[in-house]
Length: 193
Image (tube, rainbow, N blue to C red; front, side):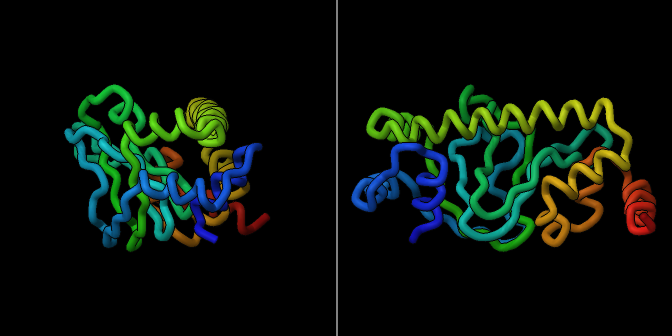
């Protein structure tokens, strides 16, 4: 079974048929990108959202001092894109690049709107994804403004253990909003417990 077919039926209470999935599938285009290639660069308008079939990606911005700040990490069966740019048709402030070689399914905003009109299951999927995204964003904000580095790392390990094997420590440190040295100290302390 196709990963996107399984994904849609996992989140929608009304299952789609394999025949309907072929219509779904026709709204996506396949794209392969190599490690370190960009899906989106700062200043571009995000024209596609990507469903990741294979690989790992990160979304980050670069501040005025040239420091990268990782905003999101993505792996298989996750969606990658810049929602603000995608919805508002504004230039993105982010870069999204492949951390591993990736196989993606790309969809345009027009195709998303068309699928929402044709299939209630897709509309339901988007609603559930929005809810989950809002919850995750809320937790991330609370974590970054309230939690110690130790608590942020512990929550990260609990919620996303699969990221530990896919991304290097400096990327994880940036995602957590701490330095590599702080992450190293926190990890050593956690191993002693």
